[in-house]
Length: 189
Image 1 (cartoon, rainbow, N blue to C red):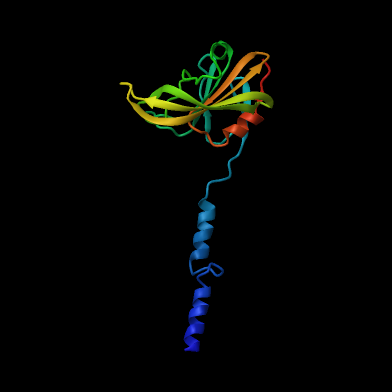
Image 2 (image 1 turned 90 degrees about the vertical axis):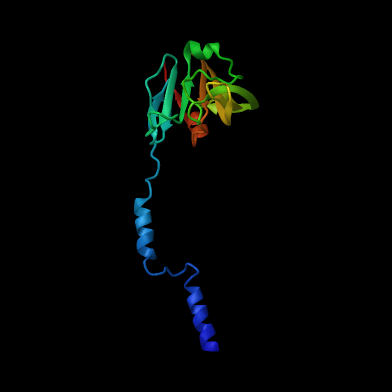
């Protein structure tokens, strides 16, 4: 009985992960080689900000005072993850403590647009190295008939600069945007 128990314990020890099973080494190496590369950051002008951009960011042509960054690889017929940087007269006319919707950025559900907002919180935040404000909203997205389809968070940063108000609107919860907004720099006008 002892030799059988000893054999079982030796085999069980090989299943703990300390010794790879045949073929596991090659599979692990293939997985490591096919893993996406680490995200590289490059400076990207976005309206009056220069931000460390993620690899997947794609700037779109600014529409007046609104600069939009989308996630690359979006389908033409679907909503595209995006955030907007609003400045100039458009930002000056906005109330930073109210959710901004006229940014040209859709909701995450196809065929819906932001229709209403509830303020969840307001607190100080760093925007481009300066003391600004962050408002967090719950946005209701509705279809063309006004039927509510989904509620999503919207983070909205505001900063008063020498050139006027600056708003950053994120309805898609861009990964790491909080840090990128804080670390951005204001571009001299």
